[in-house]
Length: 547
Image (cartoon, rainbow, N blue to C red; front, side, top):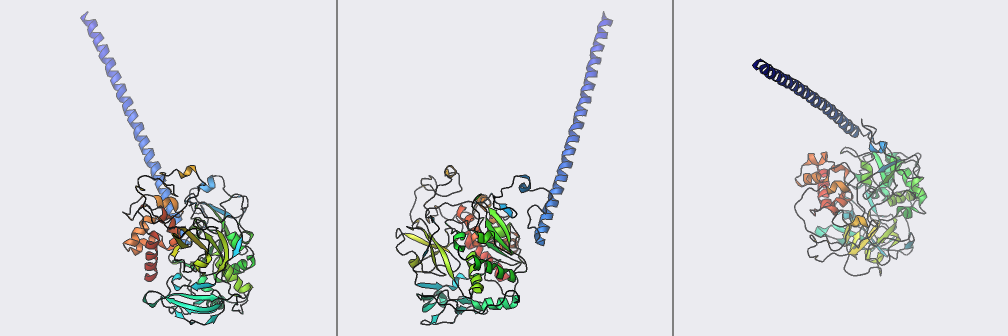
């Protein structure tokens, strides 16, 4: 019995040992598989990192070389535009279409309901030297009070750049030369004649004229200041040939005018202006066209323009800004120069050749919640504000803005429209206190915050005012800037580099690609209430002074 019992114990012990050895074998085998799996993941991650770094370096080198204008052409990976179905509207067949998912549309009351253009009853106009960035505060004025001028006659020039001449927008009598701080010239005021008289020109033949002779003619004609140069948004240097010329044919800002109405009847002058610009650049003239609607095609003056590169853009504001279009087409580096005239400047440039006259007439949009009848008015550059709005303002407690509510400048009612603006916005002055407005959102307002359920009412328009609903506070990072700026730029880091005067960092973060209008929407959504446009201008001026 004992022998049998001992054998049974030995058998059980043997089975236990065999099971233990088998279990250890399986554990070792499982550990081996885990090691192999981790090793495979590490190798895969290594190759992903190498490929991603290579792709980034390829894109950076392409951008530095200025050859990255085609999306996805210099990337190892296919872009979403190549993988997803095309968003091309039916009227854009062969042209490139760029869509942006970033941005924000501010819907305000006071837009123009029809496209009728009325004749403005304005008698006084002015040209203001402070509208031109970098000009001497006391330019050389060539006229005196009491002198009579024709439209196109030179009335002052910059002492630092005497070859650039500034012309009278209308014919009439010089009635005021107003001065500002430190005897600076604030404005030269002209009482317009009832029947306009123009200075006539012997224009050169575009087919045979050299670029140098063409530049000299334009400098003396007074049309040169209508052109603008990036970086810095200044009047172009006559000695520098622009790499390209970019023209946005639509404005996506709040209550902005329709350039299809602006160009109506002046198609020939617009095309003539494009021909002149082609003669002035060593590269191409790029025309940014509106593709926000799937059915409403741009005006034929734009879609049928000759001698230009046409690119369609769709998305929310600021997709209509020429700076955004440049960035998404062919970005500007610190060593490059491009020109950015607007549509009405191109028309004036073309009329100089097609009609041999300096025609500074403008179609101006008079808009805003405090305008009784929003409308288009045909007038001239620098029209007096009070005459443009005579009898058409709903109340006295209003703010006049030359331009739109985002990037425009506040002006007094007895002042004049700024040189480059074709929009006058009048909204309620926000001089009221909203109790607990920061805590209890009572009144609806345009906002990207989910606190206001605006997404439930996508077509709702708001009565805007100037109240900021808060005060300047700590400059914190929220990511809101990146949500609304369709550019590969880090706005907050750039603003902080400007504040600490870090020149190298400012340049590396893309300051040369921006002007105030590009960053205006970021200022609108800023929870810190920072004056981003003012900060950017200080940085741009500093960079320009540094050379």
